[in-house]
Length: 205
Image 1 (cartoon, one colour):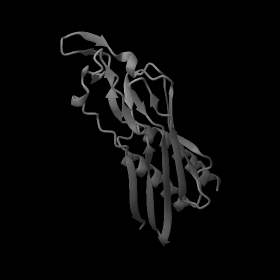
Image 2 (cartoon, one colour):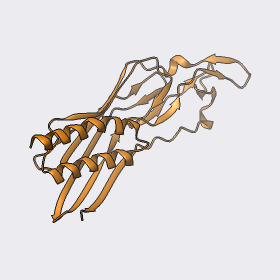
Image 3 (cartoon, one colour):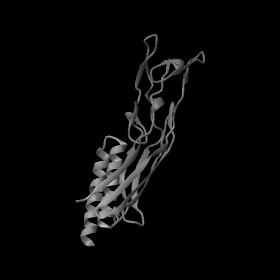
Image 4 (cartoon, helix red, strand yellow):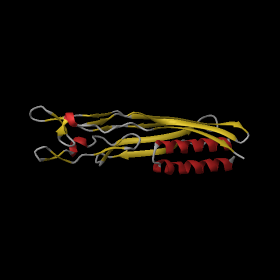
């Protein structure tokens, strides 16, 4: 049992690096599915909860990200109006509070079962708001015969709605502060949060 536990500790130890370097939510799902499968094969559970993501962003950010880490937009700095006047708009998009984002995982009662939960505190500035978001995930590996395993994993972020606020000039006309262009011409960047699902069949010969 001690060797099994040491193996699982090693797996959990590398998962932080794997998830932090992953390119997409699908990569995160594969790592969690692999851990669930290893736990089922060895009939043990990860010995303790672990973090796979921990980001604390201060107020002086240069980019504005979504809860899943994807960049929504660069924080605007200087914008030039129609009459070629430059305006410093950085303060309108500076976060009013530090941002906290974390995801942690813990084993269920059955070997090969993993629950995941996370929170993102959101982003609040004068002209943009990203609402808080919640991460929920579940993975389970099942033995369906001698050396045969079926593993599934699913999870993702929920919430995190993005809202932009218009600026107004002396004639009460609305415009987008980031580029000092008419509000009617502003096309907000897309902000669909990533989710993953994995189905894996393994047959050991």
